[in-house]
Image (cartoon, rainbow, N blue to C red; front, top):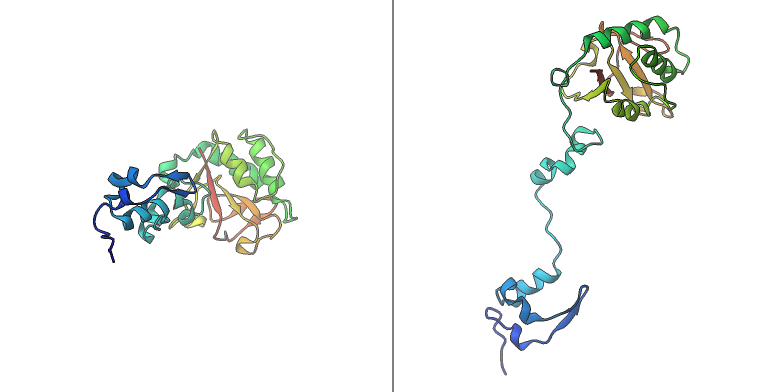
Length: 204
């Protein structure tokens, strides 16, 4: 009885065989697998090994899971984003003047205020959809990180966008409002206590 030594180059003794990529000549993989048949099998058929948790969560492709931004980019802080006080004051003033009472039309009031302030056209969409609307309005708004941020301390004119069902707002439409710089915010009515959980877009 003869034995096959798995630690030497045995590829020259074996026939070619087929894989998902077609017929493969084992002898052609001698340099790739160092002639070891176990290494050869792993090279051709083994699945990629999942990276460690630390590698996964720090990769740029998964940062959006950590920051919940829908983007692979890390969001800037309020200071880094370049807050425009002139635009912010104008938008907050208009939003506060227009606010009357809560009627379920927060998005309409906020978008009207943005248009009146000359900071963007009125675009149809529910409150939660304003996140994408504002994200595309790069000339006037920039999203910032909310990590460690007290929303009630935000300056005037920042747009707070709540996704559907977040912080007990509408499960159908979400909510949007404009900060007034005093811990309050305006939409169709005036919010005296700003709730957590919003995405923040500041005037720039």
